[in-house]
Image (tube, rainbow, N blue to C red):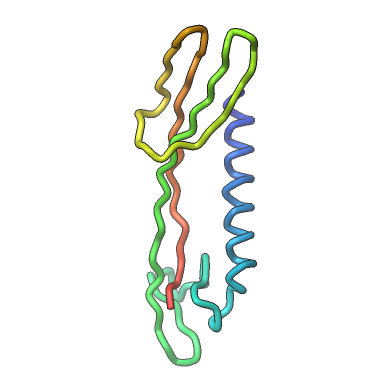
Length: 110
C-alpha cells in the first residue's frame, strides 16, 4: 500500500469511527459523554447550563500489520501490542510490515 493511500484510509476510518461514536451517544449534554465537545477559550473545559465539565483526551496508539505472502495475498490487521514503527520481517515467504498510528480524541465524561 502506498503511503498516500495508507494516510487517506487511516484518516477516513478514524473520522468515521468518531462520527459513529458521536451518533451512538447522541452527543448532547443529556448523553453520558460528548466526543469532541466545544471548549471555551481553548481550555480543557466546557460549560453547559451553568455547569463546568473537564474535557479529557483519550489517546489511541495502534499498531497495524500488513502481511503479503508469496502468492500476492495481502492481509491488514490491527494489533494491540506496541511494536516499533515501520518494522518489517519475512517468515516462510510472508513479508510483514508494522506501522503505528497515534492520535487523541477529546471527550467530556458525565
